[in-house]
Each structure stands twice: as structure tokens, then as C-alpha cells.
Image (cartoon, rainbow, N blue to C red; front, side, top):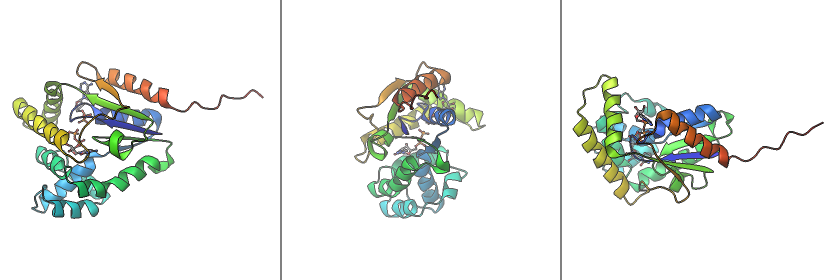
Length: 219
Ligand SMILES: Nc1ncnc2c1ncn2[C@@H]1O[C@H](COP(=O)(O)OP(=O)(O)O)[C@@H](O)[C@H]1O
Ligand SMILES: Nc1ccn([C@@H]2O[C@H](COP(=O)(O)OP(=O)(O)O)[C@@H](O)[C@H]2O)c(=O)n1
């Protein structure tokens, strides 16, 4: 079974996807980390994330260790990620890995949860359960701002909000796999919902899409 979790930055995708995977004993893939890893390597090599040739070469040569780079979650890497993510050959280079993870989850698991922007529309249009999380930009920025402060980083709320809007715009307006809800996705506005409440609602959706198991037979 494939569970797709899409939506803009700070909507709570990663938090939800991780919990669903844990509860269901499914494999979990944070697809944003792939784009972040590409951007991080391009930047560390002194390149421009918007340069198609450079970013594509890095995407094709990506190795698991790249997903553990120290600056993966920095603001510079976030902006770089949304720039490399607008390039069609970069998306193409990352597609096979995401699809095989979804259809043949590592660890012989019976399912996979993937979170990103285009899981329900492009990577796994066949996913049995699709969730599209949203929240107001102010709430998403508030969450991200708190996260940065908790990590001990200096952050200004107004700046976090502005950078989030910029990335939302780039992700929504690009022609390659833009951020949009799949027609058959269940929309969840998390603005006024606790992490627990989001999880309960999403779990109910996923459980309702699971194939019923054979009833136990009496002997
Ligand atoms: N429903 C929620 N209410 C409050 N905070 C939340 C909620 N969901 C997630 N968060 C927090 O918001 C931040 C961003 O969540 P995350 O799951 O990383 O979002 P995304 O993957 O969509 O960018 C994290 O610090 C997380 O703990
Ligand atoms: N499936 C995906 C996942 C991420 N991305 C891009 O990668 C960037 C970083 O994604 P992320 O999911 O790690 O970002 P957050 O939601 O955690 O802020 C996004 O801004 C998108 O541009 C994408 O295009 N497609």
C-alpha cells in the first residue's frame, strides 16, 4: 500500500508521515530530502542551484550519504532545493528511486509513506491513500520559526514568513510537477489542529483505504 502526503512547507507533512509509517509499520521516505541533498551539494561545490547542467549532474550522482549533509535543513538549502526542484531533468533523475521505494519498500514492509509536493500527482498517482495538508502561511511560518529557535538558531518571524511565501510561490508556479492537490486527495487544513488530531484524521483515511483482510475462518 502507498500513502502519499503532499502540501506546502510547514503544513506538518513530515511529522504526520513519520507517525503514520511508525503506526502502520510502513517504510517512510522524505522526498524533500532528495532535492535538499542536490541543492546542498551544488552549493558546497560553489555552483548555482538554478543551473540545469550542474544540478542534473549532481542529481544523477546522488548517494545516500548526501541525504545526511549537515546543512540539509538550512534556509539557504531550502531555497536552493526549490530552485533545483523546478528543473525537469533533476526531477526525472530522482523519479525512479522514489517509485521503487514506494512499490518495493525497503525492509520488506507492506507499504510506504512518502511525503513531498507531487507524490499523489506524479510519483505515485496510483497511491491508495492521498492526503494533502494545508495551513495558513502565518501558522506555517510560526511553526517553522519555533522550530528554528528550538534548534538554537537565530530567526526573525517576518523573515521566515517571507521566505516561506517565496518558496510556496516558486513551488506552485513552476511548470514541472507544481504543488497542487491530486483530484482524489483528502484535504486536511491543519491550522487549528493539534499534531495528534491531524494524525487521528489521517489514520482514519488510510485505514478506510486498506484492503479488507480475509475474515478469520472458524475451524
Ligand atoms: N498540527 C500541528 N500543530 C502544531 N505544530 C505542528 C503541527 N504539525 C507539525 N507541527 C510542527 O511544525 C513544524 C513543521 O512540521 P513538519 O512536519 O516538518 O512540516 P512539513 O514537513 O510540512 O514542512 C515542526 O516543528 C512540527 O513539530
Ligand atoms: N516531492 C517533492 C519534495 C520536495 N520538493 C522541493 O524541495 C523543497 C524542499 O522540500 P521539503 O519537503 O524538504 O520542505 P519542507 O516542507 O520541509 O519545508 C520544496 O520547497 C520543493 O521545491 C519537490 O519539488 N517535490
